[in-house]
Length: 526
Ligand code: GLN
Image 1 (cartoon, helix red, strand yellow):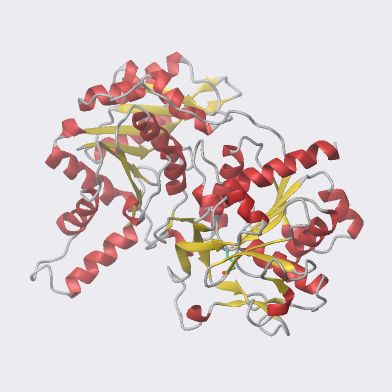
Image 2 (cartoon, rainbow, N blue to C red):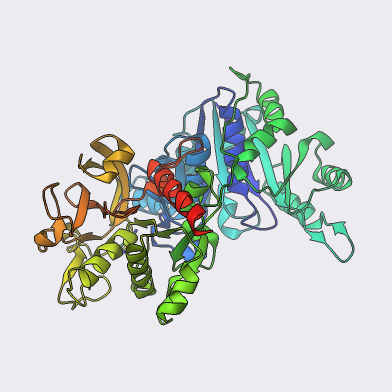
C-alpha cells in the first residue's frame, strides 16, 4: 500500500484539507482507489462537543460519527461516504491507551508515548485500505499536540518502506504590499520544524492569495531541499472544485504516482459545476464567527451551481420593526434556516419564518430550522401562543417540540444525540416525494428534540385527506422527518441534514429543488 501524508506549516486554515482532498480526487479521477485518514491532534474524542464558532461545523457520517469538517471535503471531493475509521483524534488514541493499561494489556510495562501511543496510532493507520491512503495531519507542524503523530507516521514510513510514502507539506506565502514582496521565511522555518521530526518533504505546496512568482517558488525549493519541480503554487481560486484539475494540470499527481511507482488505470476525468448563478439566497444563522460553521450547507448550494448564501445574524432581527424586517429580507428570493443549538437567536429565526410563509418566499429549514417552522405555524396559524420547544422554554404551555423519549435518560453530552443515517418514509402525496421520486430514503441526523406530533395530532396534516390548513407532515420515521406547506412555492423543513450528503456532480436534490424555485422567484423580484 502507498501513502500520501499531508502536513501543514505556518498557519492553520490555509486549505490543507482542500489540498489533500484535491490530490486524492486527482488520483481517484485516474482510476486509483483512495482511502483517507484525517488526524486531529486535539484531545477531544470527536468534534461533537466543539463550538462551531471556533471550530467550524460538525460533520456527521452515515455511521453516526461526529467529525471535523474536513471529512465533509473528502466526501464531496471523493464522492464517497466516510466512516469513523477515516478520522482519529488524540483523545481517542490516549483514551484507548489508558483503557488498555487499566485492563492490564501492557503486561506490567511502563506505558510511554513511544512505543505505546505511537503503536496505537500505527494500528489505526494500518486499518485503512486502498491503492493510496491520504493521511492529513491537522494543525501545523510545531504544535505540541501533533508531534507524536509525526513521530508515529515517521516510524510507520520506515516500517512500510519510505519509498511507499510521499510527504506533501502545505504552507503559506504571505505577500507584503508595502514592499511588493512574497515572503518565504515562515515556510523555510516550518520545513525546518518538519525536518526535526525526521520527515523531509517530497513536495511543497504554496498557498497564497496572489499568483506566486517563479523566483519565490525557486527560493522555497533551495531552502526546502527539494527540486524546483517539487514546489507548486496553489493560489486562491473562486471555485475550490477546480483544484483537482489544477493539481492535474500542474502535474503534481503524475509526480506522486511516478515516485510511488504506480500507474493510472484510466485517463483523468473530473466534472464539476462551474456556473455561479445568483438565486439571491439568505441564510439566517447564529454562528457567524466563521463561514466554516455552515460549511456543508454553503457547499451544497455551490455544488448546485449557485452563489453562496448571504449570512444574516438572526439575533440582529429580533427587535427590529416590521418595516426594517421587510427592508432586510425583500432583497432575497430564498431563505435557509440552518441547524443549531440553544435559545440564542431563535426568535429572530421565527420572525423570518413567519415572513417567508406569509410572503411565499421559498424557505428551507434544516433540523432546528424545521423545528422552528413548526413552532411558528402552531403559534401564528393554530393560535397556540407561546408554543415552543422545551429546549428553549422548558415551561412552555405547548411543548410542540420536545426532547426525544430515548434522550431523557442520557446524562452526558458527547456522542449521545440521535446520530447518523436512518430510514425514512416519504409520503407519496407530498411535494417532498416529487423531489425524491421514491418512498424509502435514508438520511443523516444529529438532534435531541423532535416534533411532538402525538400530543398535537389534530394540528398536522398526516394524510392526504386531512384539512389543507394544517401543516403537512411529508415524511416520517419513528419521528417527524419533514414538514411542508404544499400551497406555498417552496416551504419545506427537514429534521435530517441533507447538506451532509451532497457530492461533486451530485448535490442533494432538496437543494437543487429549493435553488431552482428561489432562482425562478429571483427573476420576478428584480
Ligand atoms: N437543537 C435541536 C435539537 O437538538 C436541533 C439540532 C440541529 O439543528 N442539529 O433537536
